[in-house]
Amino acid sequence: MTSPLQQLSDAGTTLWLDSVDPDFIDAFQPLGVSGATSNPIIIAGLLETGRFDDDLAKFFEAHASDEDVAWAMTDKLVSDAQAKFHGDWERSAGDTGWVSFELDPLIEDVDNPQSTEERAARYVELGKQWAAGHENRMIKVPATPGGLAALEELSALGITLNVTLIFSARQYEAARDAVWRGRQRFGQLDRFKSVYSIFVSRVDVYTQKKVAGLTDGAQGLMGVVNAKRIGIANAGFWSDKELELQQEMIFASTGAKLDWQAEDYYIAHLAGSDILTNPPETTQAIHDSGKAYASVSRVLPDQDILSDLDAKVDVPAMEAFLMEEGLAKFAEPHKQLIATIRDKRAALTAAG
Image (cartoon, rainbow, N blue to C red; front, side, top):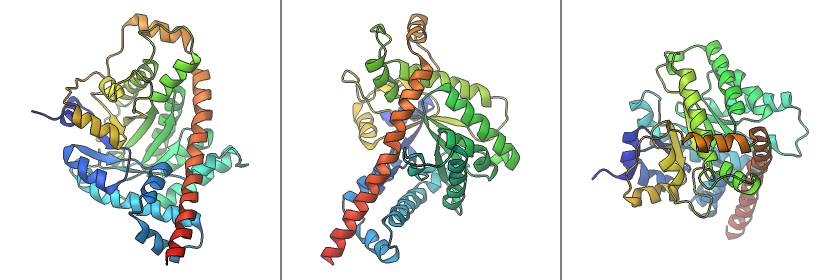
């Protein structure tokens, strides 16, 4: 019998892991997972396990700054994951096998006094630094004003991009157009790959809390509909560009958030195209479920549900709320990563 993860792949979905844990990669890669993403929460969680204390000790000798150690460890863990997925990257000619490296989230800290232009310049500077010398590394940039302002120049440098923190069609279109303008300036379109990470479950948490009067049938579907509509628009935009590689959506934030949702709620609704990036526990739940998955990512709900959502959900207000919330979640984990490293330095120094 074909496994659920294989059925997802057969339906047209590319599976990536929302982790660079080498143990999880080793477990899930043989089951069809062919890429990964990273962020400070993931890195901090790995360091807290104690499994990488020997690496930390070496970096503590080389770097006086906890910030420098954070980036050195991130670079190492992402590079190690890239090595594991490099075969997928080669076999697919660059369509999968990527690992995302997130640029400094503190650029978006609420206490950062920099202007949009200064933030954009910093993204470009860091993008060049962390992309250099890597074949299957994606540079992850948020769809904030500063991030969006950096995308064309980053793309014009030939850097492969994962645009993250997308909640609306407006953000997606601004990101896509900037990336495409930049890549046309760079050329080498036969090697061009880009992805756009639409956050799904946070939208449904928002509508449950903030949108009164949605019908029972529509509640819990705004995230799915939003993602599907943007996915359909993305497929349409690239359809006549005659590119060799797919320019895809990443359906991100796919863990169940509402108490009535099954663990694979979003996976079942979004199977059939693009990339699903799931945390290890969600990937394991899919593997263990025994369920069959059909290709439905381009199929929208009935018109009465769409009409209810369109009438009652103020998308600009939703984007503004989720972006404010998302930026807090974006910057704070990096501060926690620094705190984790500071504590590790103290503990390892005392033990030594």
